[in-house]
Image 1 (cartoon, rainbow, N blue to C red):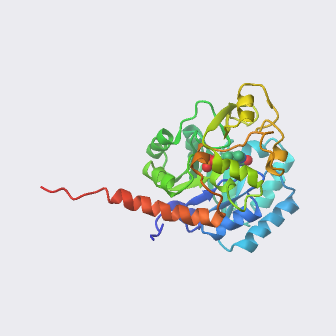
Image 2 (image 1 turned 30 degrees about the vertical axis):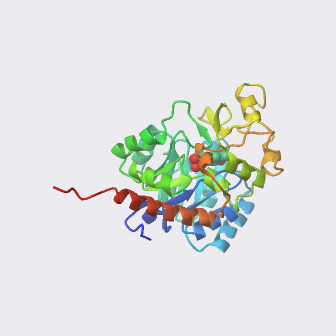
Length: 324
Ligand SMILES: Cc1cc2nc3c(=O)[nH]c(=O)nc-3n(C[C@H](O)[C@H](O)[C@H](O)COP(=O)(O)O)c2cc1C
C-alpha cells in the first residue's frame, strides 16, 4: 500500500484519504459520516433539515464513532431561501466545531468571509467551471466539481467529467475533487488522470449499511442496469435528475406520473423508509450501474483506496522499456 502524502486534499481536510462522502440530505448524518471518517475518508454532514439540537446530537454521534476529521456542508441555495435558518446554521457550524466545511450550489462569495474569519478550510461544490472560477477568486481552498453523470440535479447542458475535469485542471489552481460516475478505486484513478486530487461519491454511499434508507432502495441500486434522466423543475438550478430506470420513472419521464411533487416526483417517504419502490423516483447517479453489493461505509473507503493503487500500478506497468 502507498501513502497520499503530498496530496493537497489530504492536507486540507486532515483525513487519511482524499475520498469524500457526498452530503446527501437525510442520510449524511451521525452513522454514515462517522463511519466514513473513522475509515479515513472525508465524511460530510448535511445541515439542511434538522433542528439545531438534533443536528448537534448527530454531530456528537459522529464524534463518538470517530476521532478523525470530518466536515459540515452548507448548501447555499437551500439555506439562503430561509434567512432565519441560514443564520442559526452558520452560527452553529462556524463556531470552531470542525476545521473543514464545504459550501455548495449558490453564490460562492456568500459565506467566504465568515468561513475564513473563523479560520476554517473550505471547498465549494459546483457543476460548472464558471462558478468554480468565481469561488477560487473568492478565496476557497478547493473545488468539488460535479460532472453531468452525477446523482442529484444536473443542468441540461452541463459537461460530463471527462471534458469538465480536463478543462478545469487548465484553469484552476486549487485542488479539484471529482464528483459523478465514481463508485470505486478504478473510477478514482481515472479522475486523477483527468486532473482531480480527490473524489466524492454519493450513490455508492447510499448503498452502504450505514445509510438509513430502506434496504429495498439499496438493492435497487445493486440491481440497476440502466439510469434515466428525468426533466424536473424541482431541484434548484437543475433540470435533469437521474434515477434508476423503472416503470414508474418511465411514466414520470413521459409526463404521466408524479410531476412537480419534489425531486423524487412521488411519495419519497414511502420509498426511503417503507421500501415501496414503485411510488417515487429512485434517485442515483450513473454510478449506480457499477454497484454490485451493499457494503459498510468503511469497506467502501478501504476498498476504494486498494483498487485505486491497484489501478495506478496497472497503468504504471504499461510502461515497457524501449529496446533500441
Ligand atoms: C439521491 C441523491 C440525492 C442527492 N441529494 C443531494 C443533496 O441533498 N445535497 C447535495 O449537495 N447533493 C446531493 N446529491 C449530489 C451529491 O452531493 C453528489 O454530487 C453526487 O451524488 C455525486 O455523484 P454520484 O452519485 O455518481 O457519486 C444527491 C445525489 C443523489 C444520488
